[in-house]
Structure formats: C-alpha cells, structure tokens
Length: 296
Picture 1 (cartoon, rainbow, N blue to C red):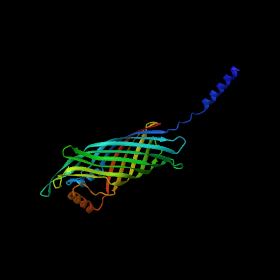
Picture 2: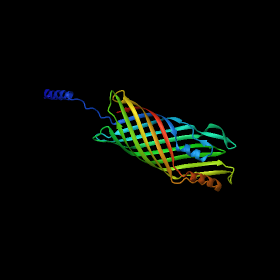
Picture 3: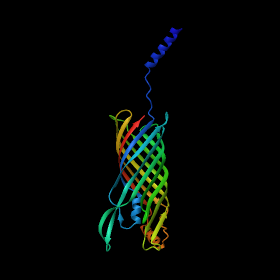
C-alpha cells in the first residue's frame, strides 16, 4: 500500500514538473513623476486686471512631483487610475511699470505673492477588446489653486479657484520595440466650482481710506490635456519615460461685478470690466515630464 501511494505521488510530481508555469498577470502600476512646468495661471491675469501698472512677464517655471497608481481588475478589461500632485511657487512675480507724468520710466519684476496648486484625477480605464493598444478613460478631476500675499498692517490679497467635475479621454500605448515604447493621452474635462477674488488694500479716494472686496462667482472650467511620451523598459517590471504635457483651460465665471462697500471704486472697476466685454479668462501649463515606474 505504501509503495502504491509513493508511485502515485511520484507520477503526480513528474506530471506537474512537465507543465509550464502560468505567467502571472501584472495588475498594479506605480509611477513617480517629475514635472518641470511653465505656468500661466488664472490668478496671474486676475492680479494684473485688478491692480494697475502690472503686466505679464516671461515664463515662470516650477518643479513639482506627481504620484500615479493604476489597478487592472483581474480577468477584466476594466481598471482604475488615481493621480495626485501639488506645488507651491514662492515669490511669484509680474512685471511692474513705474511711470512719471504718464510715461513709463522703468520696468521691474516684482513679487506678487505665493502661488499654490493641487490636482487629483481619478476614474476608470477600459481597454477596448479589439484594439488592445487603446484605452478609454472616464473619471473626475479636482483642482484647487490660489495666489496669496499678506501684510498684517496694510493689505491682504487672495485670488483663487476650486473646481470638480467629469473628464473623458483616450490613451494609446504602442507595442515594445527593443524595449522602447511610445504612449499618448488626450483628455477633455468640464469642471464646476467658484473663483474667489478677495483683497483689502489702502485706497485714498475711498470714503473709509481702504477697500475690501470678496467676490466668489459660480464658474465653469473647460479644458483639455495632451500628453506625449517615449519610454524604455529595463526589464519586465521597471520603466522610465520622458515626455511633454500641455494643459489649456477656459474659465467662465457667471458674474465678475465688484462689491467693495465703496461706490466710487465699484463703479470704476465694473465699468472697466464692462468695457472689456469678456469676463472669461484662461490659463495654461506646459511641462517637460520624467517618469519612473514599476509594474507588478
């Protein structure tokens, strides 16, 4: 009996050894991303439109880091994605024109505050069954940003925005050629929230000697993102990429009328906005992107 059992075990072990091990499906992707970004935010234009003498200067850059994780559901074409980044640009600046007798006599870059921005993207990825290199994206995007500057005895300034809403996109990932690959992503989004322009500054022509503005109109934020990158796999799990990312958006507030408590100031500011005839604003971000990723 013992010999019979041993023969069965031996036969089973030989049969198992002859079988090829099944390749384990890679379900998780983790990516650490470094962005070198040229920033042209809404807050910069809002500051220029509010305070006379300022004009937009050349490129402002910032380096920020982003984290991305993806999960593919086993035995399914469906997956999940989550991206997050934030950064703080100290001493954000604009060009200021110094005038004398109505003529510009000098121009200088002047700090206008600290700029902060954060973003979260999250949603689902669907791999098209007959086009294995194409993915559809359906998710949500959250954005918060603000430009702040404060002097405890003289003024406080905060221009900002906060939105959340849906995004939809498409991705393409090429096959590997000598471990190199190409990828691209195109995303469109329409977000909803508010902009907020808050500032209190000395103003000699006002009745109280200062003005205090706090407007927070409902706002639509409509934009698109284009992402192109080339990558290389060191092995089956580890890869790097380098690429370019472009984000452009239109900001459409319901109402930009100013209410400061000072009738003269409000009339002048609202007349200037009316003469421009367009309350919409825009912003854009252009990035050089370096990624280090792992697939498991």
